[in-house]
Length: 85
Length: 154
Image (cartoon, rainbow over all chains, first blue to last red; front, side):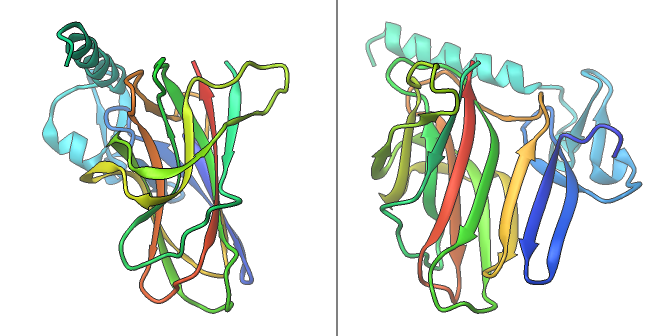
């Protein structure tokens, strides 16, 4: 992978095994990437945020970047705190 | 951004057929976003054998009961982390089923390390008690394992 989102390294008696990973831009699920694997086989490419997404986020068909989800969670917590809950 | 380590070197709990949280990082009372960028897991119990272990990383929404671990700053000049570190849970945190971020199986004899490239870290929100758990389970192996989490605070 040209710009991997991470690397997964397993070391054991049989030797080392290393594989690239990418992190879904929507839900952050980490997926292993085999050499020369196409984006559509990993999940898909979100044409809205122009990032790789996992299969379940691609199937959902909605662009919800992780930043947006984080802001929603923090706003929800702020409201609960304001209401004294 | 300061970087910290949480190591489960004490208070290790035996694995079971259901997921047990080995180490976790969660936003503290003064909440700040954090990014988990690396973890390492390995088995330190006996006897050595070819058992299968399953590991995952999942978001928590409510903390469980575990032993507090003060995150160690990787740069000694950095201030103490606002996040809370915990290891060796005896009561599991509340998580949402099937929302794992990383999931893999490994051999008991292996050591596994995952590290994220900048921009691909696992982020938890600045919401008190929101965080990330590193969990493990094993059908046949019933002893302890070691886990190590590296994260940074924004």
